[in-house]
Image 1 (cartoon, rainbow, N blue to C red):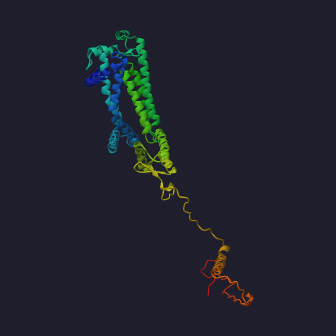
Image 2 (cartoon, rainbow, N blue to C red):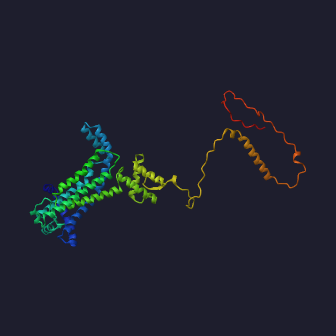
Length: 432
């Protein structure tokens, strides 16, 4: 471990300088020789490093999701060229190049953080052995050797003997109890972070070997932390416990606000987003518009949760737009007057006429004539003035007009050749 740490000695001086600056601040509050001053200095170093690594973390998320999307294509390539490993590797590299993905991008935060970890280990190991390192001089070295975190010296290890621990002003029991608790917390936080990623933020619609590998790492990483943790000083355990807690909180935030498509976290997020958008009638955050824009752009390629989200907006009378905004749907819009108030009545719908029976169609001409005649009589009565004088001529004195006999009345025409057999619709009587 010392050989590995010496390889990163070029960054030892900057790391020791940052720790000393934070110790100067916390030393004025808690005292320069206390474990709070030195412990909080290490915690602040972790926070500063993780803030600087946020862009790499974002890139890691995008790369991980891109790799999850490519899993079906990768599986096809493996099955197609399972007997030709060289061709399989070439096709994989071609796929990565076409999609612009990099498998190593998911490891960038760990790789970028490793130099700071080994530099911190080198600094704390120098404190344990009594050697000055970086900007830590004799006075700071003596102060750090006096610092205890819950009774355990900052540079003590779980495997240290009684002589080494007594030289640092502590007992073996205190050191082993504190380091064992910190190792368990460090492993538990790592296990929970990985389990949260596997159970909530993985696309459950695609079953690939990548998921099995992640599931295996969920159990391997905590065991590795437990094995290596017994060789780490207390200060390094504080460093790893802090960075694990930071990673867990950072991942919880990402899963809650920007989940992986097709995962259980996306279903919960879209359910919350549906309630929020339907209650306010619009989107308020830029992140919400980004999610909706991506869903609209998928079209028919939407998964089950995304289709349910779009249908929920449509039922509420809303429509998602290509720019991520949500507007009122035209099909569900309420008719409004010019002043903006709802209209009192909607336009009547056009109804199809009912189909008439044969007897109604045959009597339709007579009924129509009768109704037209009665209407004409009503018009004549309303147009002519009513006379009060009695007519000299009786009503029966006027001869009635002889009824004209219609040609072909009372006879039924026979079906001619070429006509359809069966009952025919009677022709309307000709007028002379």
